[in-house]
Amino acid sequence: MKRYKPTTPGRRGMTSVDYSSITKTKPDKKLTKKLLKKSGRGYRGHITVRHKGGGHKRKYRLIDFKRHDKIGIPAKVVSIEYDPNRTCFIALLTYNDGEKRYILAPNGLKVDQEVICKEKTSLKIGNRLELKNIIIGTEVYNIELQPRKGGQMIRSAGGSAQVMAHEGGYTHLKLPSSEVRMVRDNCLASIGQLSNTEHNLVVIGKAGRSRWMGHRPTVRGSAMNACDHPHGGGENRQSIGLRKGPKTPWGKLAYGVKTRKKKASNKLILKRRVKKKKK
Image: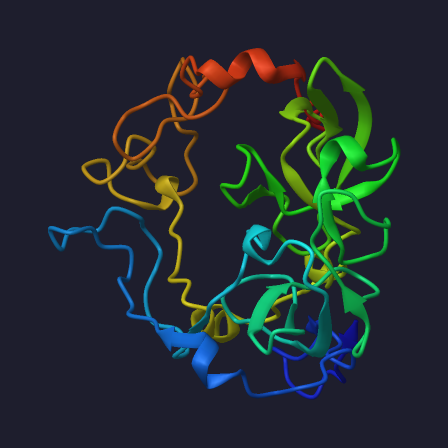
């Protein structure tokens, strides 16, 4: 973690990630594409996601979340790079057949290290294999939910799931949220914990840095007029004045209301996440 001297009020307390592990600053041109900004707007041009807009120009890095079409072909790590589109770092691989691809970089992955995707292989960091061939207690990331569909779970900085058990064609995984979920044991997963583990400790420090990231300001509902928000109106700092608790700007109850619909995958959840107690 990098800390700054308090030369200005914005610098005081500001922190950023130490990028000493990055080995290359410019991405591979063939593995990037143009990224158009939507600023939180849908196909009609209306804002569907608030507080988005602006931010630095980016190029999208094409990440290989699957790797199953390269089963049995060894690859060498060429570089570890920064990706502005995700929180973890990415690694550039060169396969023995000459093709280059980006993958999510786990913690501890080194340049010139050899990795492979295979149904059954050694449990080295960066290797990808089927869940049924992974020893109980191993940390995994970029996990498939359906065989050969590509990794959908555990893809952000510092994330990892723990293999708990193998039973009846399913593998039990303990997710970072403390939820225990069953996944088919012929799904692929990568070994290790994702890089940039200190990402959650970053202090942005000033409003301008948040704008560079494409985040627009968020205004409290209680600071608005009554016509703009259910919490608005009143003189000075007033309570929200609602018996049933806080509401969204559109009048829906905000806290303590279940939002998850009945899904077929509910039966695969063995243990729900443990909710943090409010202080």
